[in-house]
Image (tube, rainbow, N blue to C red; front, side, top):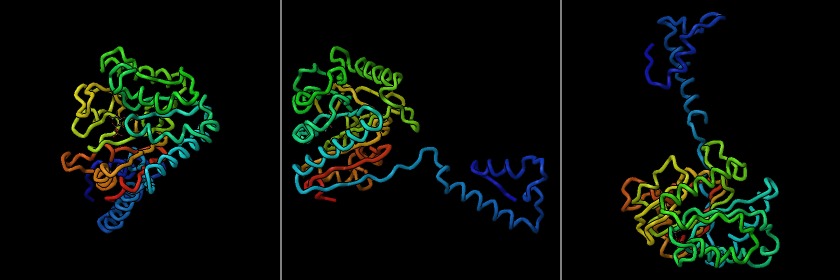
Length: 313
Ligand SMILES: O=C1O[C@H](COP(=O)(O)O)[C@@H](O)[C@H](O)[C@H]1O
């Protein structure tokens, strides 16, 4: 009987290890029994390899892709989706943590700050974070905080103590470390739960946009931050998209969120959407998938696309 490979270790231990109730059948193998024993062993190994226990992280489900006739329809759908999740999570856990990106996303959230949601959403239970931020003063035109303040936060009654902007007085590295510390503190105080499978903070909802190069947050195809596995928040000083200094949540944190919406509109993103939802590989990023193709959620990832963004699929 010839056995090889590390996957056989557990089977060998069972078959060859001592047993108080007498030897297992395979331990008494003779030349005539060899075929039967090998078949049994192969079945055991196959069953083990094919069972969900064979992989250390459970496979996540495929993204849900929703296509709409217009950008306006996307805005309407994203508002309802967010308000519904707000109600669900506040009912379940008493608060709703939302991670915002910058860019076009904020304008697409405009329907959320109109009736009926303006009155029906319990804004007092919201906690706001940024998936990435440009390291500029908070009142600078490039600030994602300022963008969100103007287009969203100034219109709703989220307590200011629940709005977690970055410290704009620090260097990118220090600002990233401080933001990570603040999130750790919230985790320690059980304000943000921890994701059992990754050990990262588990935010309820991330609302993400995507750049034409397939970047999400400030994780760019050609920069190493996208490969960060240890830090929760990292920094970049040479972002290919200006301004160069930024901080960003890393993929382990992004992909630990319960729900993620990728909100993407406009014909200029159609090729990138096709790549990201296809095999994920951009022509200029070799065999590494686009960052947008690496987004996954603990519960559900939904791509909201208007017909222009979906036109090449
Ligand atoms: O620089 C950034 O870009 C992305 C995408 O922005 P968009 O304007 O193309 O929608 C954004 O998601 C990110 O938060 C921002 O810092």
